Length: 296
Image 1 (cartoon, rainbow, N blue to C red):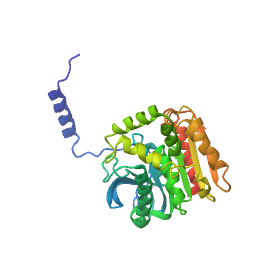
Image 2: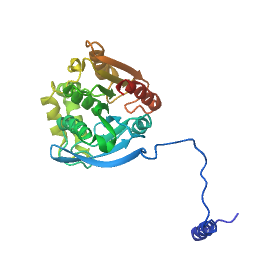
Image 3: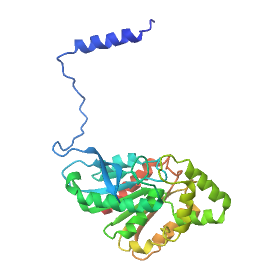
Image 4: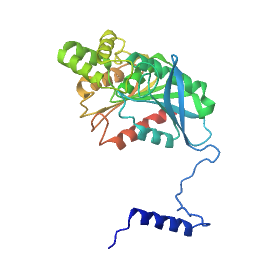
């Protein structure tokens, strides 16, 4: 069999296209429909947080709305972005705002854990102010975060009583991290060294991150703020083989704090999985979609 050279292949493609001139391609019937006047969309955007511009995307749901909006919060540093979850949330009628915190992945400013919490509040304010532009319901903002994002969802949600629903996927409790690095010189040095490798986080260093964790140990304890969610909905999902945020030492005590706190409508679930739910993503996403219906 003769091989077709690159040039010959190009000529064949050109000839084929020329032969089809004037004809219309007929697409197969898919059964998929959308609102032609208010179609689903992906909107590139940015917003201000404490004078710095943060980069983000809004996954706008199909239809005129107004839609509830999920703030989807990534972890530290944010390699797992959970955008498959964003797509499925949008398909189920939720808008999703995904963004990068100050100093992270090209957003302006300096990164810090304190800034992360503040930036979540700024993102919620942006959605409320621009509700018409995104076909959003300004009174229905939901926080869902992974790892550090789970910490941020609970820390920021505790400060904003208008947030009725907050979820942590393998959520990190930075009070536990602070205790661990305070108790072990090796762990402290390892965390600092890791922080120095994160070139996607600007304006910080490993030592600065360690210092911030230790100095804010009590303020970063998201187990202690469980009572702040009285009358509200909280979801915590753990992974049983999570080495970054271990189930027994980090997530299980967090689950107990929320399920045992009076009047908190807490839902907890442990799945087979690693920190990113690599082999249980479908189950994780399905669990989030089931829970988030109470927030609609």
